[in-house]
Image (tube, rainbow, N blue to C red; front, side, top):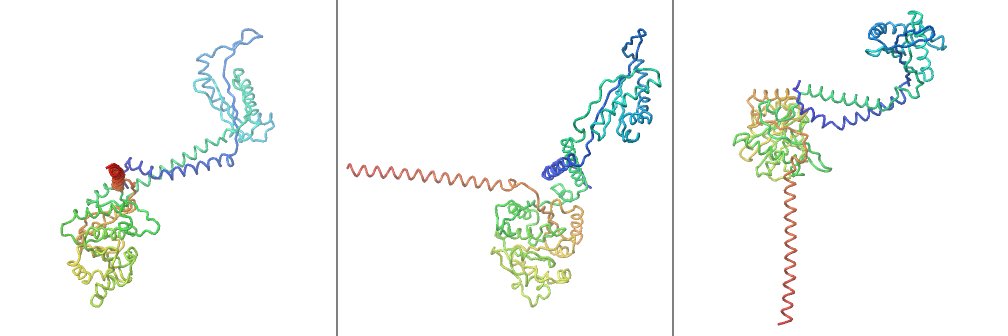
Length: 487
């Protein structure tokens, strides 16, 4: 589980705003369809009764007096009794007989709700049913039968109708806007809940704070790079001003100052496949070559090596052939030229069945010694550490191991495990590269825009200078012509 950060939650919600809005729109559409075609229309009618006392002034005239507090208290005590009387089978059976309804008392009771207005002598009888024309007469008849029953039981006539029931014109439950808003709100609430739950249980690496938790160094954050049509994977060669290219140069600088001065051999590995270690290793090697270093890149991923595809060269012969028979297979035959003269590539070679055993032989040590005095930098691209142990074998032979992790994908527990394994066998973990980071382009392209603006200003000044020079030459020509004509 992960500690929840309000800022990160808001960022996740903002990043997923399109999906949230889309979910709200889809559910809102379902709400509209549900309201129009699925919901059974129900109608509503109600009547309000008041309990009052009657005072007889003479034999022929009756007068209603104001309700006293004692009357109010008595009425409050009687309301629960009145509710039971209204909902009784006797009252409902009489209503059914009087109106000739095709209902049973239980069915009619489900449609009726009797409630008392707080701190008053008012009783409300409300009926909701799918019967448009019948509902108002039923409510009115219930009030009449109830009043009649009270007179018979208590020998008093103290119930008066305040609001007569009206025949409804529209169903109360077919308001499309209510359902649209309800369904959309449900979609938004569920979306927020999913984000919160996923955030709470998310244990993947995300930022610098997570790297600090591992007690290591963040060497670079490489943003996601969308390749253009026909563009290769060597972004430093294809698109040197891209954000990813700038991040690779940052990686080169940080690696230079993070390790020892005599650091010469590097290993790139990761926890899982797809984290981007081969891509990072290839572009890191190219950045070193562009900086003037003599570099050899060795594809030590003898299971699923990709460097031959990245640089578009032949896969074999390569490292696997050399490791199997270093006496017969010469190093030069296993090397490929790249589009940078200072960068050589040794591809993985043919796929073999026992790569771990071959990597753990003296031939690999001999290969490192062969290159040690011939090049400035030796870079290994190996297998993911969480899958096989090939990278661990190489990590104890090199000066620096660089771990590539994918943002929001690589789990912290796996990184800790790989980190401990490298340290356990005596390897040196220089730091972590956070790959495929979601970042805005302006964070990496600021300086290039600035350079472009400066270039535009210089071109403008140059053009203005040329224009001024042209005008000066024209004036000199006119003066010379005047002097020739008059002297």
